[in-house]
Length: 313
Picture 1 (cartoon, helix red, strand yellow):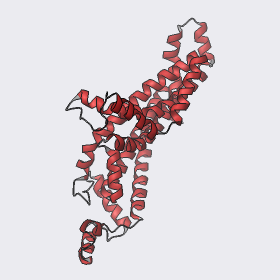
Picture 2 (cartoon, one colour; picture 1 turned 180 degrees about the horizontal axis):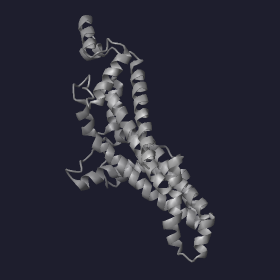
Picture 3 (cartoon, one colour; picture 1 turned 180 degrees about the vertical axis):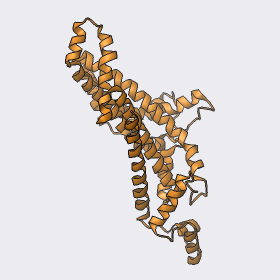
Picture 4 (cartoon, helix red, strand yellow; picture 1 turned 45 degrees about the vertical axis):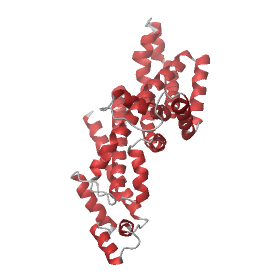
């Protein structure tokens, strides 16, 4: 297990380095006159050149990246070029909002997907066809359309939830739940549709295995066979899909946060990307990659625990 873990950690560290380098190079390709944008179009050229030099933009791109990397390894992500705000503080202030969404969507997706998938895989017949139909519809509907319908129905017409805004959990747990409920539901629908189909297929395949027939012949109760044996072996493929869904959720969070007016990482990414604020953008990119690496590491550990053969794969 230790070798398995070290291998995954080393792969994650390499991924972080490669993504950071490529991101910095890509951000530096479209040359933006940052000094001119900061000082205004009427600023003298010598003042603009001095501002760019102060930001280190007069050096080669690789030298700029090396300086950024050296500071980042020490925990210093720099300051925003446009607001002069500490990047770490700016990101930390918005991170709880996006984490609330991600954790909520992951919880809802996991519970709903396994419940629907196991139900369809075990019962089959009309139940199976119904779950498959719901999966196809949920996966095919455009995310922005689903989100708008949810807002119009539950926030505008029924007035059950607020349409926009965010309440921190520390200020009001009930207010926090009401402000993330609709965003979580809108993000979860497509994920549940995809993962539940994977669970269903894995459960059906597992139920056909010889050892399941042996367990039935020994007289074990059906619910015990499903919960203790079938579900354990059918979980690995579903967990892999669930980990991949996390990457898509980060992209969907940008749209959802914009619609619901949530001050999270997604809306922050849009704002600072349009400005070309490299220190902030790099921090957001690295945060995203770290999140993906950690989720995939957790998924690998869970799969390795469920199936020891996967540790040597």
